[in-house]
Length: 252
Image 1 (cartoon, one colour):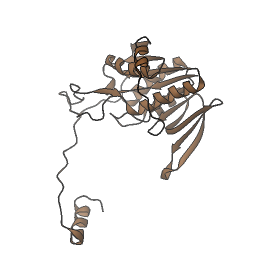
Image 2 (cartoon, rainbow, N blue to C red):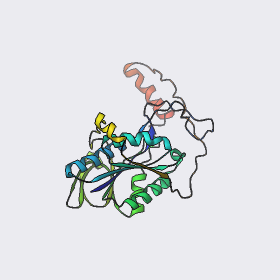
Image 3 (cartoon, rainbow, N blue to C red):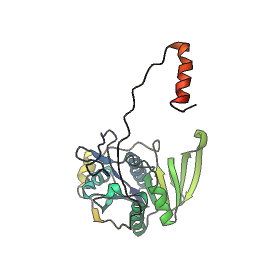
Image 4 (cartoon, rainbow, N blue to C red):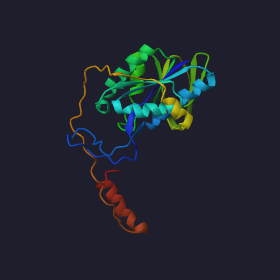
């Protein structure tokens, strides 16, 4: 079974974000880059499917700047067989349509049985790329899965529905599935895996991007939150609190 896991290089979630001097990008001087946490669930799921089957191939695909070979080596050290880097120095500024188009072209060439992605990337928080890849390939797509089994040419998945109910689906392969927390616990790379990863191939090629239809005009941090205030104590504070919630916060 051939499986593709798509990953993105993102700033660590504890990064103190600063806007660059151009006003449209993030200042990367002090940024620590990592694999998008949700994509780690996708990589782990791909590895578990291969291990359970006793055969198969896991390929990592990423649209990223050349420096992202570090994150791809981490995926290879976890157990992936090979990686493809669609090299693009401006990858972090690409919109979901461009990203999905570039990834879908390569995935189409690979003809996998299954594509796994994270439910979203923590830098943009959009959650569009997995579904767009499926649309471009003409494949079925199920988002935010929390359980996965492969059997008889289909993926048996569970996800959270309305009101927290668990929904179960049978999805015919090939398909695109997006993964979320609760699906698995991503493994750490072992020393043996790290050494083996040095010999595994990373196919670096220029990203095949279409014409951009969206551009960032400006980027700014949210305004600082104002300090809280105490409006009184006990039951006597309730009328004033209600007034503030209605007139200032506009919540009532």
